[in-house]
Length: 116
Image 1 (cartoon, one colour):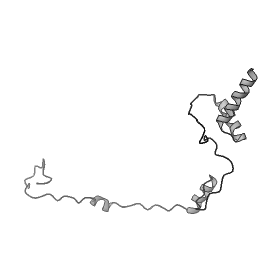
Image 2: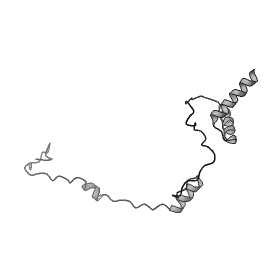
Image 3: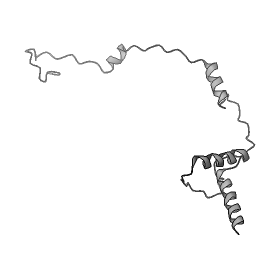
Image 4: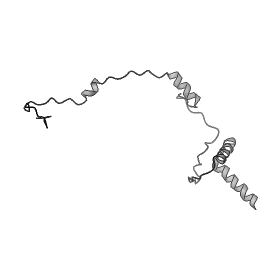
């Protein structure tokens, strides 16, 4: 009686063949994809500073910028500034290799010293 719900034909006594699970996947043809050129992938990675070698990483002489030291209490603060001011602050940060937090702290100290 499997598969006979709302079947109006007169042959309800014969069991309907049930498809096997996963049978549709066997008939599915996979399209052939060309393999990626490993040399081209490696060259594109090297251009962006990524190296696929498994050698040990070289020590970086400069500290990581943009991240606070582990012992410094920092908080996320979202502010809106003009794009020109943002670009100038980012240029200062990049030229000196310092965090934006340090640049702003120095600016505040200079402002307070000039005010007194």
